[in-house]
Image (cartoon, rainbow, N blue to C red; front, top):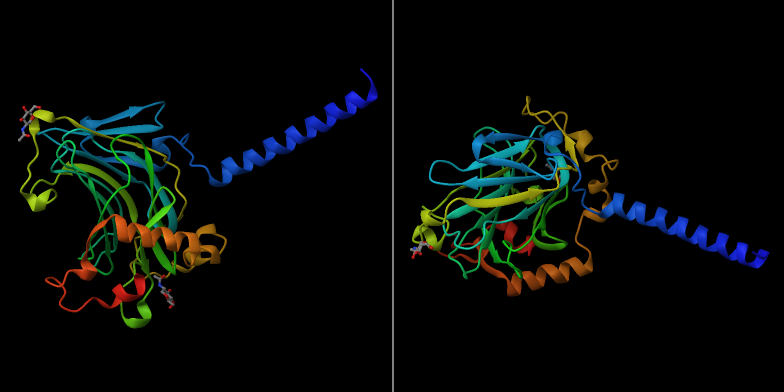
Length: 301
Ligand SMILES: *[C@@H]1O[C@H](CO)[C@@H](O)[C@H](O)[C@H]1NC(C)=O
Ligand SMILES: *[C@@H]1O[C@H](CO)[C@@H](O)[C@H](O)[C@H]1NC(C)=O
């Protein structure tokens, strides 16, 4: 082998080494870690015998039949974060079946951030409802019909929560923003929240306002979950006076950095498109419920 070839090989080798380092960081930095085991961060909260662990505990199946649904939740509570769950919803006829992924605090004046999938008859679209509670005040429902069938495959559902904004994402598309508008008197979640996931019977309200019922001959209904790593700032919820909240606002947590204070211009365009093409209910424009648009509505859209 002459020296030119050896030189070339070394050159190729270092390019390869650089590329693998590069892709390693891409993986660590941006990809969703689906290798974390369920037990590391989560526990089953109800319906034990309707929970199945798959793929070396990196995937969970919840099922629901007439006897029970099921749920799981994070071991810890969090004060800020960028939360993610990979979900695949019950397929075929899932009318009346609700699959929920949400953050919630305890107590009467609780804070809550919801993703709720409202099942439907086979061939009819599943609605994705989001809601925001702050200090016990909710009634801020929005609903979208997704641009894909959420029962066909796994997708990422994310909630960004920092001092500046709360953003609900489907994969990388923002579908809702709730800004910190405390300066005009609008509540903003500030209490320690746990991550909760559940599959339950919502047929009193979920599909066509409760008129379309669960077809129990289609049971059991099954939903699948992956991605049990958690990017959040752990916070104790033993005290409700928020005096350990400060740490969770520090920029050492990447979701608190300036990049995450507002949407960038692509995200703004994406959000606008979702609102135009996919949103089929918005409390902000429901004049029967709110003769006057709630104060946050103008700013958040
Ligand atoms: C909301 O924003 C104000 C500043 O306008 C800030 O002082 C406060 O900590 C924020 N609240 C939360 C819960 O992030
Ligand atoms: C419920 O499912 C069964 C079995 O697929 C079907 O025969 C029946 O028509 C369904 N009922 C409704 C109300 O869709």
